[in-house]
Length: 379
Ligand SMILES: Cc1ncc(COP(=O)(O)O)c(C=O)c1O
Image 1 (cartoon, rainbow, N blue to C red):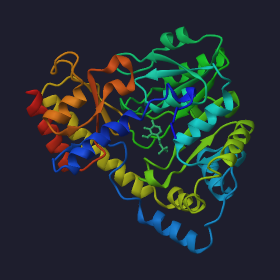
Image 2: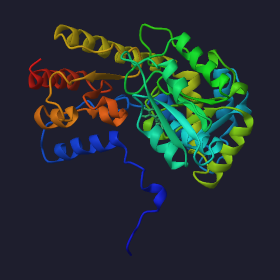
Image 3: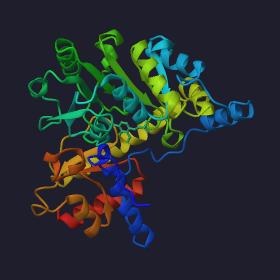
């Protein structure tokens, strides 16, 4: 059978972050020692209490279909965490799927979504997948959204602004005034705010402000989060979206005809995560914090210029000074230092001289990986 992909997939790009990681994995498979600083997931095990709770739930028969909106117990736990009503919560198989359902629910074909670069590559692809048009705008040099820049790209087809704080790839945590300013623009132009708060537990030295602190669901907030990062549960595929009841209903309809729901026992186990695993989260976040401090010291000692990340588990560094023009720094580092990072270009056209470096990996990998990078770049 000859396969010709449908037109709507012509512009859909592969996940750049997964592609980079795959290249490194194939080098590893051929026997080369590669230091992987590309990973976007915690290197910790899922806390045992959560695994035990899933096991118990399975033994108790939680192995059947769940309602497409999610298990009530799960939605109640999320609702009480955010002080909202369960009717405003839907369970999704990962926060990524939540973003997809939400955009599918609110966009007409051709509607635009403002994306602030550097941005997680999937945003642009999901917007395109549902027939929307990404309107990209660059953040400033410190990776803070440029409020005037956002206002300038808003047109009569614009429907939403997508925001991600703490940010992947920059680690930027937006201040209250920035969050407020974005909420105000959205209000003035009658736009939805889709706030991806997946890294909200990984914040160091600064105050974290959620969009729910400055606006209400009724003002057009679509808050997306999940269990992947905070609880080291990437493989469980569990997330949630908090928004207007009517949007939740549309999202549940889409989910009902596609995934049906996230795994039933995963939702039950997540209630244990919320209620009993705060210490585990704190332990993991403290360890991320220690790694972050060590990297900051090492970069400062070497005189490397970078913007200090206040959250998530990434550094986004411009290597333009060290690598010839036109050479992709991530490919250069993989080939010459055997260190796998993610190319900055994946996060926006302007960032082709940058790399994203993840410290969600062992101290040994971090020390050796940075050692190799410094040696190769002659820093
Ligand atoms: C900014 C951002 N949002 C969402 C996700 C996806 O998370 P989930 O595993 O909940 O789908 C990621 C994963 O890397 C991410 O970096």
